[in-house]
Image 1 (cartoon, helix red, strand yellow):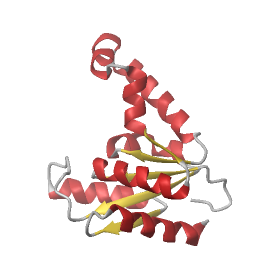
Image 2: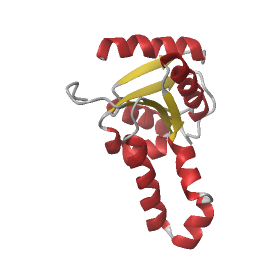
Image 3: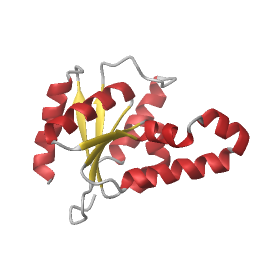
Image 4: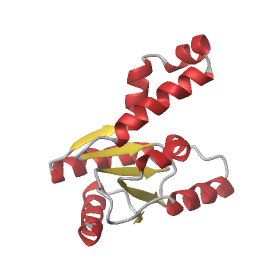
Length: 155
């Protein structure tokens, strides 16, 4: 990411969505920032995504999903979580964000079918993130402090 660009928000992505959301909430409290979860906002916007998909089709669904994420990308002073699939599809929208990859090695809560898929996903996230935080144990406060230390280096 070009450091000369204005950074408007922080985006956390992980293969463990629940942990990322927890870190976002805690980090936002520590840094006195707003927080949100991109997937929750998409679901809120669509009200019933499954029904919308069935009645309106994939094109309309993707159009609404992209509109919500474009809105998320424009938030200021906000820390957000995003799941892997949404980030993979729309990572280009977050070019003015600091993207933090929370690499949770010890977690078994992944929806990844195989070790190869996990490695591919981790490599993608590494390539498209500003920095990576290696998480050996899911201790939210410790991870928040690691993120804050890294943010001090780049902001």
